[in-house]
Length: 173
View 1 (cartoon, helix red, strand yellow):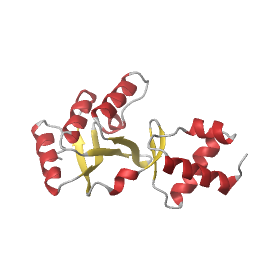
View 2 (cartoon, one colour; view 1 turned 120 degrees about the horizontal axis):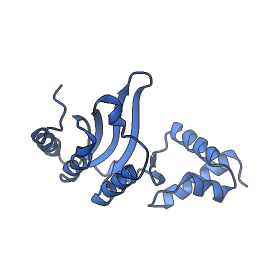
View 3 (cartoon, rainbow, N blue to C red; view 1 turned 180 degrees about the vertical axis):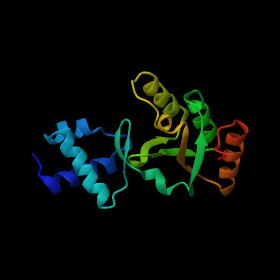
């Protein structure tokens, strides 16, 4: 069994070698520690500046972060019935939905990593939501939420916002 820093370096090496997300449970079994130890290891690695993202499928290195030129936050408001439509609009311009952010009265800013890049990612997310007992973060805030998006061309953001506004999804305040 590897100890502390040695385990974290081995975990980081595995993440750099993989293009797929690796779950904390899989790492725990591999290293002979609890899942919570792995969660702590990842927290320490992230605090040290490593670009590790947590997805619904596990941890991965954010290799695409440097490939796409621009990032922005957009404010939207809609009910759960428009969730898939919102995501499809953003992806239709070649953008990625990085996360969802809501402002909670008690906890402040709550961020959920999405990392939705493909229509298959949308379908996985929607299936997981529909088959769970969970609520969307936006349900805590009357549908108002932010998304961080990555996009390739400076004109993409305006186009995304225009279509979201046309569909009544872009938050108008």
